[in-house]
Image 1: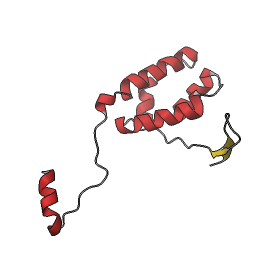
Image 2: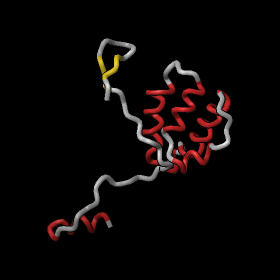
Image 3: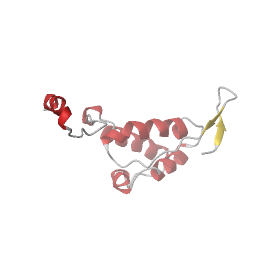
Image 4: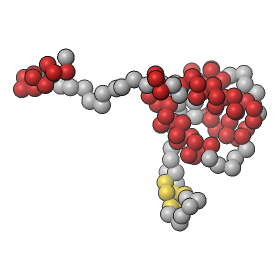
Length: 114
C-alpha cells in the first residue's frame, strides 16, 4: 500500500485496497463503501469510474451489467442495478464469527444454543 495525503489534513494515510466483489450480500457494504471512498468520491470522469468498477467485480457480477453502454448513463444505471440487486439489507444474513467447539465442560453452554 502506498501512502497518500488526505485532502483535509497533512496526515499520510495508506491507500485502501479494494477486494473484487464476489456477489455475496455480506460483502456488498464493505466493497461498496471502499469503492465510494476510493473511486466514487474522486473527480474522475464517470466513464473512468465505470471502468474501475468493472475491474473490481467478479465475472458472475459483471454478467448482471453486461451490455450497458460504456457512458455516464451506463455508469449510473450500473450503480443502480448493483445497489438494487446486492444492496438489499434484508438479504444480509447473520453469520456467527466463531464456530463453537464441543468440550465436555461446555455442554451446558452448547445446550443453551440449541
